[in-house]
Every structure is written in structure tokens, then in C-alpha cells.
Image (tube, rainbow over all chains, first blue to last red; front, side, top):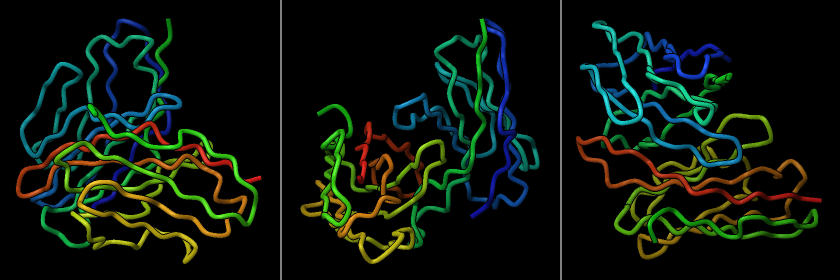
Amino acid sequence: DAKTTQPPSMDCAEGRAANLPCNHSTISGNEYVYWYRQIHSQGPQYIIHGLKNNETNEMASLIITEDRKSSTLILPHATLRDTAVYYCIVRVAPYNNAGNMLTFGGGTRLMVKP
Amino acid sequence: GAGVSQSPSNKVTEKGKDVELRCDPISGHTALYWYRQSLGQGLEFLIYFQGNSAPDKSGLPSDRFSAERTGGSVSTLTIQRTQQEDSAVYLCASSLADSFMNTEAFFGQGTRLTVV
């Protein structure tokens, strides 16, 4: 599996955009980039995923570089409720009997401040 | 139910006792995952089921840990002769069968296990 590297922590002012970076320099061609977050005392929550193109949904935007070696999760208007640990995950290829599990690294602890 | 359900939500047990944790995945989800999270730590993968079979048991920390899934639905994680280091939140997740479509995994709220 490709490994990911994220900064351990970041701060963001409420109402501003939060840009969370992730490096995945060994990603292979058929691996997707997933983002999950875990709010304190809750299970992880899916945010967004992508392969090559930038993606946007009601929660966030995902920007993937052209060489796919890094990506950025953007929360356009961060709120206090967005304070959480954000995990960038590269998922193993489909139909791989070694498992389609999500391998979580350390993540980035985002603190949104008023 | 609407989401992944885990029971019990909290379990306190004495060292050396066996415990059984239950996970009810979302109906129709054939993939099921168990993770654990120790206090202040990241998620540690334990085991993955596709249907009733577990092609990947590599994450189980010792032979005291076992898991089964019957009927392609409910899964139980059993820890025998519990030790204090087993204390953690045990999380279950499920997702649709993965073909060449990638699907998100939905997590339950976890079972907080405390071994005293």
C-alpha cells in the first residue's frame, strides 16, 4: 500500500478555508485517495475521495496534483464543529485479496478557533 | 437500521475474562472491517470480511483475538483471557462490495472496552 504523510496538527480560524495537505508519493495508478475525519469520541466519517480529477461535494473539495503525488482537502468555510482528526488514506486496489481495508495513518488534528 | 450498530457501547471486564463484541453492518454491505483505537492513538486495523470469509486476518494482535461473521451480516469479535492492554475502543465499519467502484465505509460508534 502507498503510505501517506500529513502534518500532525493545524489551526484554522472559524469561517476561513482550511487546507489540509497530504503527500502520497508512492501512489500507484489504480489507487484512490480517500479522506475521513474523526470527531472526538465518534467513529470515523467519510468525507470525499478521488482518483485523478478534483472532486467537490457538500462537505469539502479535494484537489489532486497532476502527478498524483499529493492532494489537499479544502473545507471552504471551517466551523467549530469541523475540529477533528483528518485522515488521508490511499486505498489498495480493488479485488485485492490482501484486503480492501482502509489503512489509517496518524492524520492531522485540525483545531478550528473562534 | 440506518447505520452500523455496535453493542455493547461500553464494556468493563475483569482481566482474564472473555468478551464478545457485536457489529451489525448496514443491510446489503458485504464488506466488514474491525479496527481498534487505543486512547489518543490512531486506528489499528484488525480484520476484514468479504461476505463470511476473512481474507485478511493479519491485524489480529494475538491468538486470543478471533472474529466470525455469519450469514454475511452480523459479526462478532471475541477476545479471550482479556488483558489490560486490550482496553480500547473497538470500531466496526461496513461497505458495499468493492468491484472497480470505490465505495465509502461507514463506521459504527464503537465499543469502549475497559479491562480492569
